[in-house]
Image (tube, rainbow, N blue to C red; front, side, top):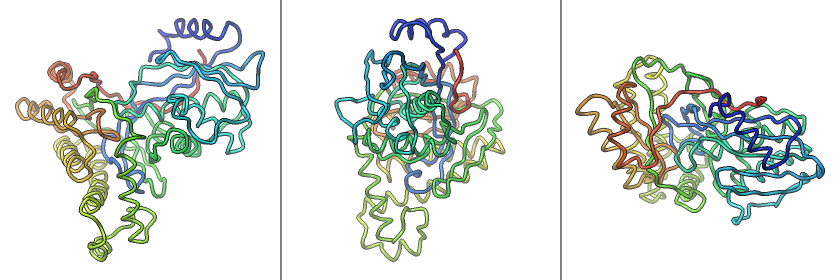
Length: 388
């Protein structure tokens, strides 16, 4: 969202909802696309995401009249919520839906000793929900920055990411890893973020591609991760790690796997295989990205999708079909080097490596399969607070 062109409209919309007067600021948080390293984050593994040039925006201003409350309105859903600065519900209310992310973030800050102050929050943006671009992490991060600014407090990006993750776990019911919240806060333009989800070490990897860009194609199929197979996959991995006396699968060796082979189900074997091989693909992908090796990047994208579809079983017919169409066209015109599903799965989007000049014809050709639209990705900056 271009704040320069949208400033007048946004201020007018905010004032129409909450009244005029006072300094209005904006917390802006990008979505993310994970280039490779899917379902490895909560397994203590490696991931390589970028922030994208689509955002969730939270306009905010100190409360007037009733300073002990936080009032929230979302432009996208035309819905409102209000709660006390002293705390919210102990757990998410399924009837609140989107508001759980806001309330959960507020409670996570309170749990860390932040004394919240009242304010008016107006949520908008151009980041699509459920498309595998992590609109939830963007909403949590933008909300947290708005609430911290209202309270006159600050928090480093990584502790803030953990607070937002807690909100998603406890209030939204999604046991997500730490990748999304971390890259939303730490991203750097024209770089991917290599994150070790075990040590939490990060490294910015330059994207040295000439004439190629990453693009996202949205199937339009919307997942509901909290009520889907996502949490089951995590439980399967945790069971395998527990049998190996490990906190996560990160420390698992082939010898250890052989020792407990008979104790795992066939599906658990496949889940572990995906995680171990995907971690290796992340290392290879980061190196290929830095040297601009398009052929290797494409092959790794293709291999990642096969593993996600067959071993981790988080793809769906629409995702597989879209990947197949991109690969088939790429085989004919060499415009697409490779593609894979991105995000939690069971719907959402595909990330592909394309010749930049080929994006417009690919976007047109994929319309029957990418019903949610397509987006050429620009690796962008992380979350921040700006004045309108």
